Amino acid sequence: QVQLVESGGGLVQPGGSLRLSCAASGSIFSINAVGWYRQAPGKQRELVATITSGGSTNYADSVKGRCTISRDYAKNTVYLQMNSLKPEDTAVYYCNVNQVVVGTSRFVDYWGKGTLVTVSA
Picture: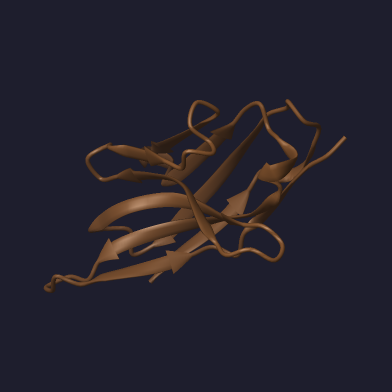
């Protein structure tokens, strides 16, 4: 089992910045990728950014150039730096870990409880 705790959300004005953190604990091994997803009211959860075990990153088109995902192995923490925030970035942001099930070719996903980001004047 992997436990994930997000932090760093809050209210920010348009054009502002936030850094989200996701602290992982538990059985942290055989990680395929970690990422951030978000869900706005009335909408489906969508990918924001991911980073693989090899360091490859992937971003949603809507956040490219404005967001950066990074990780600190020593702290078992993943970050999402968000700049030039827009009202449409308002959502609950969830941390995700995609882990290989040991001895198989299957994967399992773990999710945090989310942190709310509100972009408003």
